[in-house]
Length: 165
Ligand code: PNS
Image 1 (cartoon, helix red, strand yellow):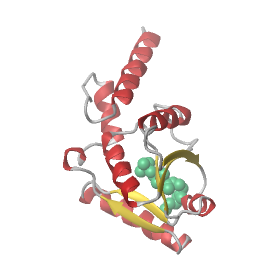
Image 2: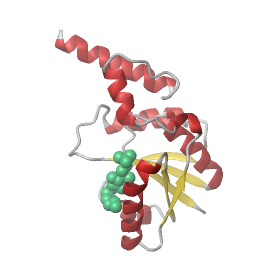
Image 3: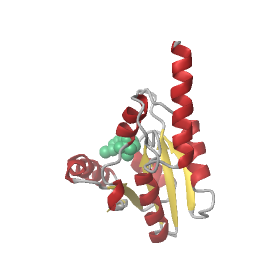
């Protein structure tokens, strides 16, 4: 069985991620969305919230699984018996970081291959970082994140404003 891991922070899940996962789910027998547990960062959504969102968005895709991981990605891939790591490539600006990660992961484990996929054109400029910035400044992100994420972003913003008031 060809199992692929799609790792990331997903803080939050964007339509760019969703697009890549749909493409991956057509290529591989199973694709595992692996949410990084990273205690160093200060994320907007907790890991649990990010897992909940991804599970809800992909509830009708039988071959999409949502999980969490920490430690080395290649160790997680080995534990899950996955032979592929999927990463999205949006623009040339992504390339350097992605190439470094892919080659480091290859050095760590020759058995796991990184496969890059390009999202649909309308999502090539979309990133979780920009989504958070736009929402925090009162902008609209409808259409570039799943509806559920958009709703949760608005709720978070409201909760933060209420706390500050
Ligand atoms: O969505 P992101 O934040 O760009 O994803 C980065 C991620 C999770 C793929 C990367 O940070 C990662 O794989 N972290 C796990 C630790 C690890 O294996 N580091 C060495 C990779 S070269």
